[in-house]
Amino acid sequence: MQSIMILVTGTMFVMWLGEKITDKGIGNGISLIIMIGIIARLPIAFGFEISSRLDAQGGGLIMFLLELVFLVFVIIGSILLVQGTRRVPVQFAKKIVGNKQYGGVRQYIPLKVNAAGVMPIIFAQAIMFIPAAVATMGDQSKGGFLMAFTDHFGFWYNVTFAILIILFTYFYTAIMVNPNQLADDMKRNGGFVPGVKPGKKTAEFLDSVMSKITLPGSIFLAGVAIMPAIARLLGVTNEFANFYGGTSLLILVGVVLDTLQQIESHLLNRQYEGLMKSGRIKGRTSSMQLQS
Image (cartoon, rainbow, N blue to C red; front, side, top):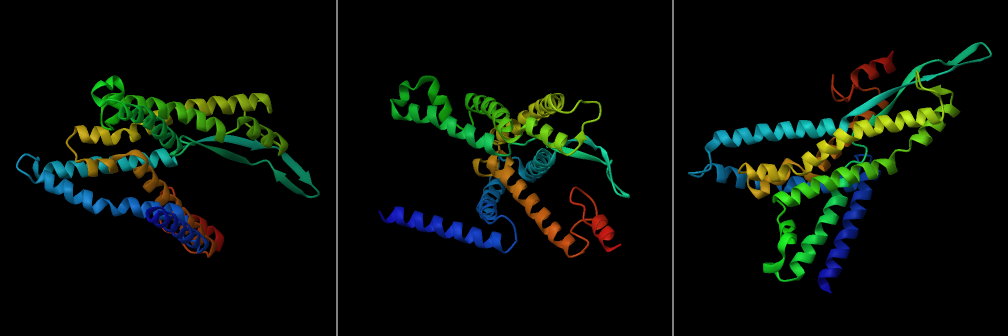
């Protein structure tokens, strides 16, 4: 009973603290707390990995440096997955009201390569708990094929995990992105995709584009999810291998990028130059246009 009270009280305090952080405009409070909890495990995992590599059969410091380089490439790939978009051009018809002309400009609909985020991984992990729970409830020596799903670094576990992620990515993307609504909104506002008829044809075109970009996005997301198992096969310790992919890495990348964008928007609202001179978060050019 005491443990339940402590867990409930601690959860309520963390939620209150997250709401206070969000109210201050620093970023999403709950996401920041989750990110800090993930980063808190990094120094311990880092120490375990260094000690294991410096052993007689660990490979030495060179192998550890190669692991860090590989981790950097995985992080870069995760950033590309989170930030990747397909821009669909939209042309708006010209309207003349009095002596002024409205519309006639070309804008873009940013369709994200990974519109589902980390939700497919969470759904797939929840499903993968079922065969493992069924296998552990019975006689483990007679568990058969189900016992393979108790090993998170095993072959069959990761193959099934990747397939479920791809399926759930399509499922969640279909829920999040509604091509019919996008087509209706464009038609209502006098917009159209060049070369495509408004209405049903536009909805079919957007659905086709989403299907094409969701396939590589789902495969890449599945690759990021099973990357810890690949790192474990290469000799990385269990603690450090968890930072090579999965929900931990995607949450870290997503929260950091979201927080940077919020800070950038606050700086631009106050006509500062922003955080970066180049890159995805462009603040310097926009702030100079505001000042002019």
